[in-house]
Length: 232
Image (cartoon, rainbow, N blue to C red; front, side):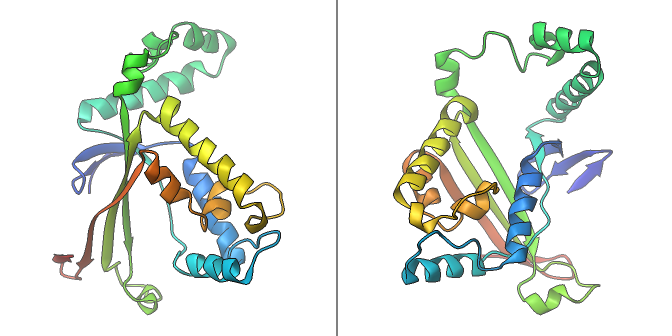
């Protein structure tokens, strides 16, 4: 990873990136904070013994982590556009007249990313999304307690699917709703929770894969202290 100001060049996936100031990272951290309180996850309303074992087995494989999110582009110019749009929103969003300008001339101040009419059906049908996850950690938990040790494992995964707003989001919401209907006894009694801690042990990932959203492990490798690596 090469750092130029606030812009990262992610050589591993061939993309330029800048930090995305959104709620995504906060939601993930809230999920992990729930797990930190109870490593077995949240108990269901009326779980069977088999379901309890399944839930605890699932969460035993999840480790606490630091999480951050970037928005990426194939080119440095694309990232510059992201930053420029962010500056416009931050500047004009402070005043009433500024917000009026943003709402009435979105294509101007978003440099073409957004427009009032929204996308056409053909544009939605042809669009896709891709999310990369680059994780670094330790092959042995005891290594993490050694303050001067660097992570010796790296894994890169990818989530892909159809257009993320009009197609993928409804797919996810519908499948979550079906799980709520079908597996109510296995889910928490109620309250306000991040989705990860609720749906983690369910078959949501399998359901999404059956509906056009793919989850792939791109690479997994051991990183040695001298900088060399072994991929497998």
